[in-house]
Structures are given as C-alpha cells and as structure tokens.
Image (cartoon, rainbow over the protein chains, first blue to last red):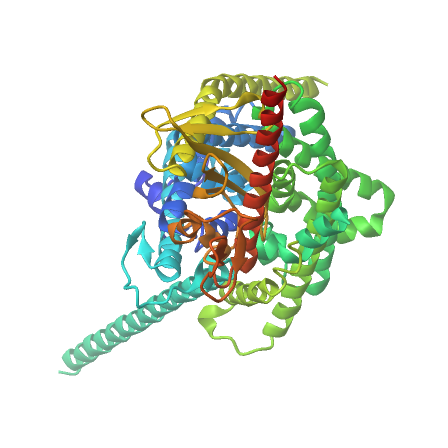
Length: 233
Length: 192
Length: 192
C-alpha cells in the first residue's frame, strides 16, 4: 500500500496532465511516433493501449498477492501479451481497415514501457479500484497525446482532420509531416512548447509567491511599526 | 545477394529506429553518452540475432504446424524475456568486465520494441530462416548506428546553447528528426 | 523448494488460462477474419469491373483468377490479384481485364507500404484511374514527365516513379500469367 493515499480523483486525473505518459514520463514512444500519421490512427492506438492498460491493471492488482516476486515480470508479460492478442484479434475481425493501418504496432503494445511500467510500479502495489482509475487516467492521457500529435501531423501533412479537408487546396501539404522525420520534429516541438508553458507557469508562480511574501513582510513591518507607534505613543 | 539486401535494408534504408521508431525508449534514455550508447547497442544486437533465430524456429516449427498462431505474441515475448535473462547469466559467468559494461542495460532490453518488432516483422515479411538471421543482424547494426549517431550529437549538444525549454528530450527528438531526414536520402538505394 | 513449486504453478496456471482464453477468442474470430478477406476480394473484383455484377473464381488456374459477368450473364472479363515488390516492400493489387485481355478495365491497390505522401499515392483514384481502358498491347508502359502518347502508356506519379513502375510491372506480370493460362486452356479445348 502506498504510504500516502491520494484522492480517487487525483488517481485518475494525474495521468491527464501532471504525469501524462507521453509528455511527462516520456513512455511508450514507439507507438507515439509510429502510428500518429493521422488523428484516427492516433485515437485508435490510444484506445487499444488504454484497453490493455486497464485490463492488465485489473488482473495484476487482483493477483498481486498470489504471484511470487521472482517470476512477477514474466507473469505480467504473459497477462499483457494476452490482452494485446485479444485486441489484435478483435480489431482484425471487427475493424479490418484500422487493423491494416496500425499493422504490427498493435502487437508492439506488449512492449510499450508504459504498460509494464504501470503494472510493476502501480498495479502491483495498489488495490483494484485505484488500478482502474490509474489505468483509465493514463490511458486517456496517452490517447489525448496521440490524438493531438496525429491531428497536427494530419492537418499539415494531408490538409485534413479525421478525413475532413480543413485547409484549402492552395496549401501545399507538408509531406515531411507524415514521414518518420515529421514525427520526431512535431513531438520535439510539442515538448518544447509544453516546457515553455510550464516554465512560464513556474516563473509566474515564483513571482506571485515573491509578491505575496513581500506583501506579508510589508504588512508585518507595518503592523510592527504600528505596534511601535502605539508603544511610543 | 538477397541476404545482403535484407541486411542493408534493415540497417540503413529502413533503419529500425529512424524509420520504424522501434527501440525509441533506449534511444532517448541511454543515448546521452557515446560509450554507453555503444554498449547498449551491442547488447541489443546480440539479443536481436538470437531472438530472430529462436522466434523463427518457434513460429515455423511449433506454432504453424499446430495451428497455434494466436499464441504468437505471448510466446515471442516470453522467449525474449527469458533470452535476456539467459544472456545476462551467461555473460556474468563468462566475462566479468563485459558484464559490468552491459549489465545494467540488459533488463532494459526486454521492453525494447526493436526486439519484438524484429520478430514480428520477420514473420510478416515471410522471411526464411537465414533471411531472418540477417534481418536481425541488419536491424542490430542499424540500431547501433542510430544510437551512436544520436549519442554523438547529444554530446555536442551539451556544449551548445540550447533554449532552456528545449533541453533534454525535445532537442534530442528534433535532432533525431533531422537525422531521419538525412536517412531518407538512402531510400531508393535498394529497390530493384 | 516450496517457493519454486509455487512459482511454477502460478506461471503454469496463468499460461493455461491465457492460452485457453486466446484459443476461444481466436476460434470466434477466425471465420470472421476469413469472411472479411473474402468480402474484400469480392468487392475489389467488382470494383475493377464497373458495370459487372457477378463473379466466379476459376479454380484450376494455379493462381487466384476471377471471371466476371454482367446482369445478363455475358462474360465481361477477368480480374486477378497480384503482388510484387514496390519501393519499400510488397505491393498487392487487383486488376480487371477485358475478355481478350487487350485492355485494362480497372485497378485497385489492395496493400502497400510505400512512403506516405509519395509512393503511397499509388492507392489514390487519380493514379489508378489512369489505367482505365489502357491497352495491354504489347505491354503497359509508364512514361515520366510527359503526357502519354500511345494507348499503352500511363503517366507515372511525379516523385514516385519507382512505385508507379512497380505497379506497372506487377500488372504486366499478371497479364502474362493470365494469358499463359488462357492459351493452355484453349489448347486443351482444341484437343478435345
């Protein structure tokens, strides 16, 4: 059990931004870069990963007391690979087009560091409710990240969002965006942008803190001056 | 000739890291120093070649004859995980210096997408036994190449004036993007 | 010792449960996946033969070949899937031909892994549309950077010449196969 219990809401919410798998933890980079040539692809990959994340989390957290420590990684891997195979088979049967697009990157969810990382780092130490919330949060965070990245690359690389043309024909599509190089560049720039925002937030907070502190000091000195004045008076 | 093509294609033209994004985690994680990048690349290549061999045998000798293709992912990842463990023990026994150099990287290899990716691609492309091995060799060579290149770039970047917001991961990704563009120049090298 | 047994038992149980579950799901999905593939082929066959409604698979050809008919049952031509190597990997197409194989009635690219934005443009209608009513005599030819002058020429995609040429080659190979098959059939008929 974790020594400090946080609220259920935080357990879910942390995956969205504070511990976003892509932008904060830099986990699961292979699919992040590989399949995000378009919004729908990013979304589908995100959902598939979330499914595996959620269910392997449930199984692992309910089995956590049964699995001997020495073989836990092997056991986790089998559980994860089983759910990945289920996703793969179901997608092939029900969404053949999407399955073709994502191709070998669905099975590669098995080695997505995010999933094993959550299994080992979270589900094996927490109860089912918390594992579900954590899995959902991380999954949603991951999906949002993938969809944004896919969306940006799709707009600039094919002029469309989810297949709908949004940029005029006069806009020459940036082919580089849907090529591998574009994936690295877009993600790198997004990371930078996020850091920029964070840095600004931090400096703003520091400034606010400073101002608050100054105001406090001022107040204190004023009150002490008043005290002095009272005493002298 | 075919085998050479498979090798070159995996190593350069369709570089595993820069074109297929396989093995990005270690690519970003351990590519800070040239020496550790090379060791990591070497250890991964070692596992890759063995994994390519063993998974080919398992798939074509066990899974296909018994109609068990649906166990492909489970069995492949188990093979890779146990291989890594095995290699770790083996190296520990045989060469202490090598173990000290590679030791900390070995557990990381299990979750290196490049290894499982290699096994999956080799099934998908219907490679023969020898082709699979050369594919493994090529992918490993390509992995080392990409890792060493980016590590070299990062060592230089440490000395460059990078805006604070872009330090670390962002600038590494952008450098990788430019490297990927450079590697696009190789495409078309092998096509006929 | 007790611990080791426990380890083995736990792993075994997990393995068996996982294997059973997957076997069950795969049993459910396999017919659906096969049906999907069949429907896709069927749809593609009619797509490359606009106006036709019926198709029969020719069984003794030694490769996949479909005879296509219209409402009234008149033979409108043949359709065949064929594959070959493109710029980066396998390209699989479906093409339709007139009954005497003189003209192409349509083309559809089923599978490809070409470069997005460049080679992958071969799947787009503007490219496959160029093959409509193209003569196969003596064989299809691709021209670069100029408008086609002869009835057997098509214009390659700018920036994706290799992929375009690959498609043309796959088509010519396919036509040759069908031609050989039909002529042996004719000989057999004649012998009777």
